[in-house]
Amino acid sequence: MERDVIKQKTREFIGRFVKNREIGDDVGLFETRLVDSMFAMQLAMFVENDLGVELADDDLDLANFRSINAIADFVQRKGG
Amino acid sequence: MEQKNENMGRVKCLIWDLDNTLWQGTLAETDRVVPDPRALVVLKALDERGILQSIASKNDGELGMTKLKEHGLDTFFLYPEINWGPKSESVTRIVEALNIGMDSIAFVDDQPFEREEVAFSHPSVLCLDAADMDTLLDMPELNPRFITSDSAIRREMYRNDAHRNQLEEHYEGPKESFLASLEMIFEIAPAQEEDLRRAEELTVRTNQLNTTGITYSYEQLQALCDDKDHRLLIAGLDDKYGTYGRIGLVLLELHANEWRIKLLLMSCRVMARGVGTIMINYLKREAKAQGVALRADFVHTDRNRMMYITYKFAGFKEMEKKDKRVLLEANMDAIADDPDYVRVLIGT
Image (cartoon, rainbow over all chains, first blue to last red):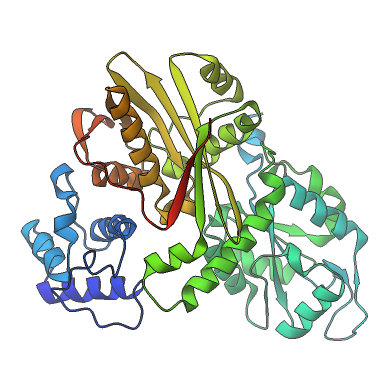
């Protein structure tokens, strides 16, 4: 999947939970408390189901879901 | 009969038509519609059984609700759909709002056309003729296998949920302050005799968020409660808008050097409140205080991925793996504090 498409889909997904805000690609979603740690699980499911990346043991590290850029990096690394 | 058993209690929600089904008469033609006494018997009995109820009616929305309120019936129904659109679409919206499977829906209507329209779009819905009202309560599909004290308040719990969802939608601010505004209290306590029916129901109903997919009977749970090498904990959640009921279960097997989580189960309705993680952190703290390791059995099913992710994000690592069975071990180094927005009570 192209990086732009990954980022767009991710932004749309997050937008369903964080309303009325433009979220920069590098904004730390959890640090800035835009979303909570439970959202990490929903994000992980989204990455698996909608971005088609099967998450292995080691992948379930919050750092991989830190920001829109981090997610895009991760998905591209996994060849998704 | 096997088939009869599978069908038993299959229906979690009955959707009612109004005209000539719930009441006698057609609202658009006469203001003087009268609730059908046979329908009221069914309505109240299903409510007591913990079966949810809703409405799909072709009428003016306001008129329909006003008439229901007039007869004191409005509060029985969750997410009523009273509009002029196709009933199949009303059914879709109700199912989405309730977050249950289409195959757990039944629909009762006096008109064959309406039943066929719904059946065409949703073949798994059980479509019933209002003419058969007298036989509804005997149908296996409408007889749940379990009726617990949580069943009697199920409608109330869903109404509380609907209210909270509405508040959340209109809330302006970060999710954590919304959660704090709920004033949640999460209680973990050893299961008592009166909890066992509900515990059994949880293992059978909640195969989505069950870490091993194993179900337990009342008798099995009772034996485990009495066994000194096992601990059965049940969790409840309440907030200022009402109770969520008893929503989680943990079965621990105690060994000299290890506590093994044989089962961790959370109702999917409360997963979004982060209670799975709170439960796990409690177990970590207790195990650490006792100087034992904390491990967990996990069996991958096609529905429990969320629980696997919960364990991983809570710092559990895979120790052993064989096919779908996994043994996980907790990292006890840094146990996260409970989130600010919930009060955790430990019962004895």
